[in-house]
Amino acid sequence: PTSHTAILGRSMEIPAIVGVAGATQSVKAGMQVIVDGTHGFVVVDPDSASIEEYTREEKRFSAFLTELDKLKNLPAETLDGRKITLASNVEFHDEIPSVISHGSDGIGLYRTEYFYMNRSDLPGEEEQFQAYRQVAEKMHPSSVIIRTLDLGGDKFVSALDVPHEMNPFLGWRAIRFCLTRIDVFKVQLRAILRASAFGNLKIMYPMISNVQELRKANEILEECREELRREGVAFDGAMEVGAMIEIPSAALTSDILAPEVDFFSIGTNDLIQYCLAVDRVNEKIAYLYEPTHPAILRLIRQTVESGHRHGKWVGICGEMSADPAIAILLVGLEIDEISTSPVVLPKVKKTIRQLKFEDARRLAEQALTFSTGEQVSALITEKLREIDGDLLDA
Image 1 (cartoon, rainbow, N blue to C red):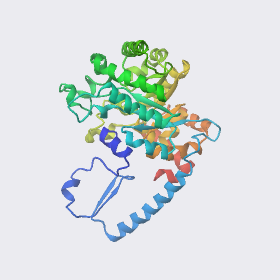
Image 2: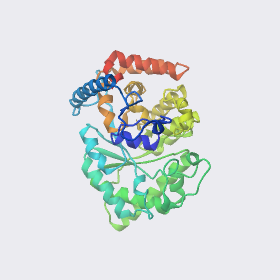
Image 3: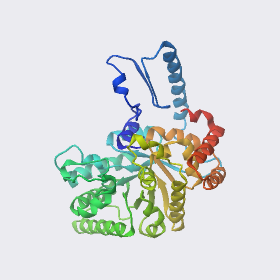
Image 4: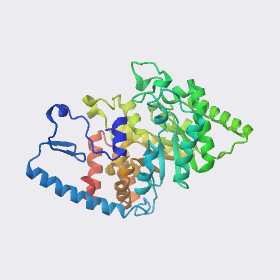
């Protein structure tokens, strides 16, 4: 469910289920199929009773969505007054209407890889500038956090001639690639800087593993600023710069990284993968991919504490935050911004608005004492049931 393909499907509101072995062999052309993305079931050639049951479920879900829509223009604020920024993860420009219609406070992760994919050449500065400018203008005054190029892993580009690697998720990808191909990196940085003059843009670097990488990236960014100043090109000189925390070494040294940035964004999809040594696109070991694992909670807590100690805000942009029960935990861990697929934001907002921050904080402290992720999951599920049982099956 955290593969790049699954993330895209969710953001585009395509009902989908992954890991259904043999399904394509069982389903024949013209056969009726029910895809229950909520519970992870595929019902092949359903009988009349199943069709009636799911028809009722569809009506109930439609009514639930109508209720959620009433929250669109209300803040994500706990009962005791703590406000959480709810932002959206976006891949394509076409998703912006969905971001706005679901009441997002902004874009917490704007992926830029699609500029480079399915083409034989590299996107130029002007092409990228125009795209970033459109997003900035459409979202203004809300902020848009643009993640610099994060190729590699499960995202490849033919034009860059990236060599085959035995372990692509651990290899020449993301910031590692950019710091080697500075020519490609600077084209993107200049485009982002130029677009920052037309809206509230921020920038963040993916897959930072040490402070040297972060400092080098900032040096290159400053070179781009100087070039634009000499050319008389306008840009936002106060644009915030952040680092993604998605490698355990970054979380464990977040106190060292914090003075170098304006914010942290915890990318839990990769953080879980790297911390637990589990391939997040391998169905056979999907059971090991555990967002509530004690190690993950401790890394999140450490990152938040480091950021806040240095006066920096801390967000989270992984898929785990799409779960309302986990959102309770994140509020208790004092996350400042939650960014996820726009379609799930209303559920997360509904959860937050029925929650007391002090209760969430006590729950998080209790969760941090547990020895297994199952214990944590049971705790937060029970809390969500107490708050709003309808959200469990939504």
